[in-house]
Image (cartoon, rainbow, N blue to C red; front, side):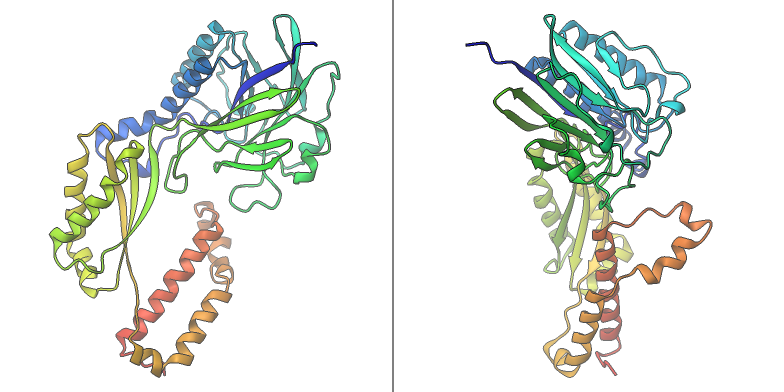
Length: 415
């Protein structure tokens, strides 16, 4: 019986080396240096994982760099790690994306012979050989300029029928995706037209398996860069044989972002608040280094005064100081206080119809008509980010809370 052919690889995307982390410049200098190095640390862990698992190849599906003009430091660090991989006979296949598009990099450096780069927007293929035997055809393309707006998925066609495995690399998004800029848009059916063994996707920073047969996978980015990129970040390890496929996620991040919501309504004194926050932060320590966005909720008007007088900020500073010296440090880099409106039963009884109608109206109304003029403003629209669905919902909730708060401040009279 002939020996079964097999291949193993790591699939990663969106490394975003050189990310400036502008919104975190206020954190202590020592932590900020670690944050700046975090994308490189994730890259180091990717390489060490490849060596430990003795994979055949690594797929890097776009946005290796955060911008089209990567620093010399980032390119040299990447090259040196590719050289290290070469010593272990590990090949690397690269496609560039919308952040690190080819025509933007005026000073590219030369990578070692184990690195294969898709040179332009034409879908091409490389043949991976091991011990003189053709094992896999790797298909892909690179962004030449910042935007690719056509459906590139339809251009992926299997060639090399004598090769056992066929792997596609695509940096793009489902045409229905509203969370990111839609580049190289595709429908899921487009990816199933050809019998590829694996679709290695990039561009979307949240990991997701779109299909299992064949595997169509977004690994997410390798290191979170802000609160919207929370939790574990990393790559997928895949073993592909002629009878099946096994894929598993491997975390690589050196720092995790988390949003923590904490009800402080019962805190009557500042030391109580400090203790409650400290206990909450302690629970996060065993997950490694953490950057926390803290949302404090309260039904007490007194806590709004604490916020205004700086008491909450002082409590957070004390908590941060107690955790900064630890190896697995936790740092609260931002906070907000949300007042939770709880009308009394009497108020609700008096204004039952009005309050109910207000809530229903808020739930069924889109905020887009109310902000469209702002987004159409010639200057403002340059700086306004696209609002995700959860952000629109949060704005609606805050508006509803504000209206209820103002009504209650006026005595709860809905008339």
